[in-house]
Every structure is written in structure tokens, then in C-alpha cells.
Amino acid sequence: MTLHAASREALGLAENRLGEVLGDAGTDPSVVGEELLSVVDLLSREVGLRRAAGDGSSDPQVRVRLVRSVLDGKVSDPTLTVLDTAVSSRWSSPRELLDGLESLGRSALLTSAETTGNLDSVERQLFDIARIVGGSAELDRALSEQTAPADAKRGLVRNLFGDKVDPITRMLTERAVVRQRGRGASYGLDELVKLAAERRERSVARVTTATELTDEQQSTLAGKLRAIYGRQIAVHQEIDPNLGGGLVIRVGDEVIDGSSAGRIATLRRQLAG
Image (tube, rainbow, N blue to C red; front, side, top):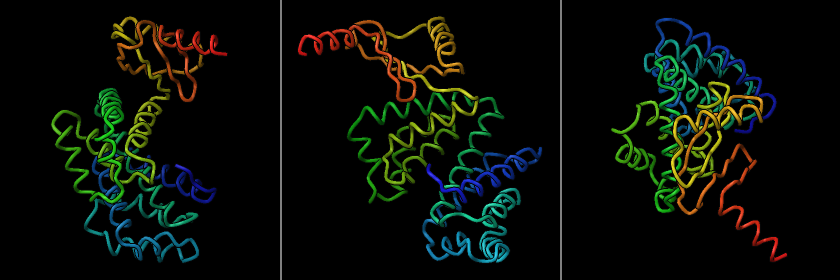
């Protein structure tokens, strides 16, 4: 997500308010997250309302009253409190207000997974779904199709994964395929994996191996990567028998290729040169 300076400041204020709201014992983070995302859907449909709510040149209190007049009684008080802060701030554009509310909604859902002790599971499930979608050109196209109805995409996600994953995983996956901002389903799912990892101040290492690593091997590898990068690393595995042996590690844009296939490919390039 790319935001201009004014929007980054507005998002920072809203994130602080979200943290305060979710810190209250009676607040359910999953409800706040789901409601914030429903507001994103509403503003996406209602262009006039979106423009009015995100008009930084208008009176902030007028914007607050407008949003409350539409949503009061339809979403919870904690969600309204977060929205008060969000719409009273100055965003660079109404579109960036939408992006900010989307970010807040996802954050609240991840907070819910964290507070229930399910963040590890949600992160692994998101990674698995990202790999399934990325590994099927047909499925990726179906979920990335810009003209496809949102309900059809949600239905496909629920049919494929709904009863197999945590509800938070399902909701986050639906968001990744419904509101893609032109980058496709696979990209959005990969971003969710990163967000879940960052929740615990970790980076993601995508490790491709010919055979599955044991828990001990994963732990050893994570320790070595932590020493290299100076931060916690979440190891996620992909199996590719074609590697022949060894492994390929991707951390961000960096690739460490220690596979047999990688060494053979390097040798071939050297011989060809």
C-alpha cells in the first residue's frame, strides 16, 4: 500500500485509536475488523459518500456527522470511534482513505487471531492458500478477474477453503481477492502473509525443498537465517521434487539457491558464456 504524506499521518492517528479501542476488555477485534471492512465495501459502492468522507478540504466534524448519520446503529461503538478519527483526519484522496480503512480492518482481524492464540495457524493457512492460488493459473485468473462479481469470488473462496481454515483466515482471504487494487489475487495473499509475520516482528523466508524439512531442521534453518538477517524469520516450506536436493531460500527480493538444480543451471550459464 502506497500512501502520500498526509494519508500516512492520518493512518498513524487512526492506528493509534484502533489500538486504544482494541485494548478495551469488552471489544471484540474480529467484529471491529469485519465492520471496518464492510465500511470499505460501502464506500467503494457509494462514490458520493466516499468523496464526501474523504474530502480533506471540508470541515472534519461535518465529515464525522455524515458518516455517523449513515452508520450509527449499523456498526458497533468501537468501530464508530475508529471511524471518527479516520474521517476527521486529512487524507490525500478519498481512495487513500479506503486503503487506510482496509489496512485498519485487516489489522483488527490479525489482532483477533493474536489474542486467541491463533496467529501462527492463520499465518500458515494464508501461506498455504497463497501457494495453492499461485500454483493454479486457472484459479488465480478466476480470483483476479476484475469484472467478476465480488460475491462470486467470496463464494469460490468459501467453497474451496471455508470449512478448512480459521474464520479469520477466510475473511482475510476474501478481502485479498475482492479488493485487489489491480495487482491480482496472488499478490494480495502474499501481502497478507507478510502482515501476519510482521505482527510478530518477523520476516518470511520461503524455502523450497525437494523433500519436507523436519521440525528440527526448520528450527535450525530459522536460527541460521536469524543470525544472517538480524531479526526473527518465519520459515514456510514449498516442496518441489525437481530441485533434486538442497534448498532455495527467498527472503524478500533476495534468493539463496543451494539446490542441485540451481547449481546445474549456474554451471550451464557459465559454460554457455
